[in-house]
Image (cartoon, rainbow, N blue to C red; front, top):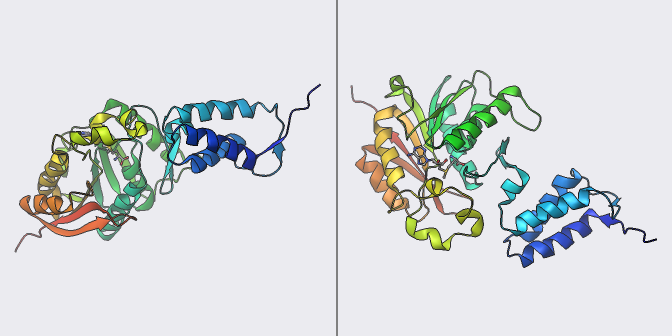
Length: 300
Ligand SMILES: C[S@@+](CC[C@H](N)C(=O)[O-])C[C@H]1O[C@@H](n2cnc3c(N)ncnc32)[C@H](O)[C@@H]1O
């Protein structure tokens, strides 16, 4: 009789990292460790018997990742600031650089007073809206998306936050979130026009011509409408800057994630919309990642 060999977590990581590397996965070691951790529940102690049923579950997840399905879809979730967000095919997967964009909006909302009104078009999973609502006391957040799948998933992620599910940050004191089907701002209450303290968004902002350069995880799994902002790439950014001039209160702030090659264009578009550009915000790699601008105060 053959005695199954015991396997340590480190041995499993090494074995599956080699499989993922052979499949062309860009970060095989990190992905293997996260998949092993997802199946073993975080423990790195002891060894698994070679016939442990969790090993076949791990093999199944590694096979999916080897087909270049994004790690977040294999695991069904991702982390974003203090949140664990459910991820699902058909809805854009939140990216780490957007955590910085959310952080700029959070700072602006905190500066705005006790019940800041924050609107977030293009919400996807609800990542930015929920980050604001879990980190800013009193925030009144209105989020929307043109995709029905995104609206459904954002509502599901909101329900987990409202329910105080384990592993998920809860709503900040007095914060409230509404998620609405909305093409840009068209689905938001009209009476918000001219009253918004912070408009924040990570809209589609890539040019269609970039498609051939995308990794399979992006090209085959992120919805095209979440990525491409018209032929020139910044059509949605430009539209949101123009809308900001109408929807922000005087002194209100807009924060938009942008194509890192388009910082100077974003400044020009904000100024053309009548806004005062406060900053181009770099991400952790130093790339131009967001534009922050304000609506001018009205003169007495
Ligand atoms: C780059 S994704 C960002 C999603 C989310 N904010 C995040 O950072 O993870 C862009 C999102 O904009 C949505 N979208 C595209 N065009 C839109 C429009 N005209 N109005 C509203 N949402 C739109 C897409 O469905 C997608 O969910």
